[in-house]
Image 1: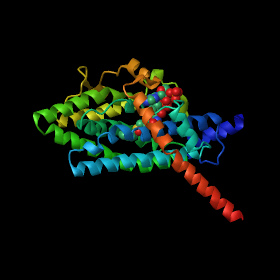
Image 2: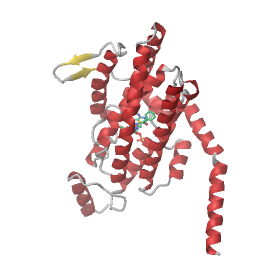
Image 3: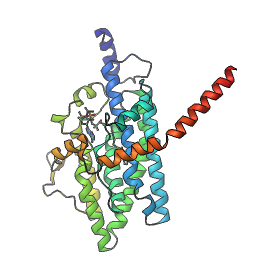
Image 4: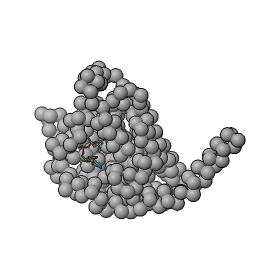
Length: 311
Ligand code: FAQ
């Protein structure tokens, strides 16, 4: 890249200007955005599966309607994000193919199973809670289309977190068996949720450059700390216990000291060896293959229309 162009570009970032699709940008900036926005989009799409698992088994019609709406929102979030990625010169089909053959990642969290109805509460409370903590600062990210997608997504995401909290509250105030289910769901989702923020700062290969470009606004550890500080009082209010015996309020830092997740498990999950990796990718591949006739039909129809116009 031309050093003069690089300096001007960095000055625009430093002054808080947004970078738009037709502006000059370093190749690394473009590639990093495609990786992060693409991974984010894939997470929304794969993230429909663990909750989709409970739509037919929701305990009431009202809960079913709410869950259905939430999963539908996630499809929408995926589409806004694919749209933002497409402005960087990559097509949605290319991104999808990279997800399906394992060249691109999606969030580690969606490789864990949802075993009971209380998991819908834990996903809302913890997974959406972590997602918002990460996404709110991304509304100020330097790339215009990503920033605008984040603004719309955050509005819906805060409703998602609250619906999770409400499920957890009902379960925690229910029968002994229901309270036990809520506690069990919190126990299973706690550490995987902490992993959503990515590896600890010393192992985060992309953070320094991504923060200099304001693609990321905070480090992984900063956001993880904020998430713990926000979530522990919520769990306490519900009468539930965070599964961390080392958890202590630290007056000096004004935040909790907490146990790190098992990072070897995290790296194993992102390599493809989590409890549900195979199942999740198989489900997405099946959906893509089953939809081939629709895509082919639409393309054939469009070609016919074009030919008729030319004739
Ligand atoms: N899972 O150098 P860093 C949602 C990879 S929310 C898998 O720290 P970076 C809403 C990383 O790609 C979830 N892989 O990376 C919802 C890199 O590998 P690479 C989606 C991970 O990018 C809720 C390597 O580790 N949200 O879907 C993870 O600077 C409920 C080194 O890591 C976003 O994607 C992980 N957790 O920071 C939907 C937010 N963490 O590519 C349904 C946007 C790291 O070199 C239901 N993304 N890796 O092979 C980000 O903010 C960042 O990309 C981070 C990672 C913070 C996730």
